[in-house]
Image (cartoon, rainbow, N blue to C red; front, side, top):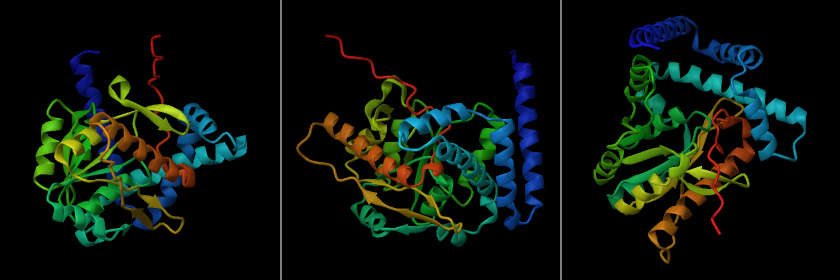
Length: 301
């Protein structure tokens, strides 16, 4: 595809998204959830992106569940994701105080503890619940940067970035300068949030996740060890009544390990923490992603 066709496609996608958001803004906020549910049903039955992949992943993660239970969770995965997207659209209509208290954050004292140490903090989260709202809420309490991946469509990427940074947090793009920017932010006593639940290709460390070796980015652990800062986990849970909660927990790193062992330990503990939440709230995790895409090669004898 030549550059002209690519540009036309980018503009078409951007304009379509702008029109969609314009009409959504005309709808009362209380009506957005029912609309999200309708969109999720249309997607599930008529635009089933990676539906087979989600079903197969759920079957492997929850072998004790029958087909009816698996399909129920799959439908709810679509529904929860549609609700998350709909909520993101309305972020800029919320005031700072509304964002700050949008989530009931437990163990909030750990935030102050990290701040007083003055070395920043690595906050490990995941594509779970409304992860964007969690980042927005945290950023009202303490200066924060979030590592993000750029979108192919630069127009859509700017739109999403504006949603994130308005009354929110700084963004650090995954590029060649990411390590330098993260360490600078930590030196400035910032929280740096990283969603570590995606396949990290061959560069990752293979640690267990639902009983299978999953390539997991070790960058978060490396950053924390270099900056000598604490590592916390926090996952946003959307409750049945529509409210949110998140619990901040610290990964305590043993001293009697090498740097490589510490990095692997941190990411193993992260996967354990995330798995415990996914087991309890399976439909809140982003199962669309191919989490176990990269296979661990056998050791040569």
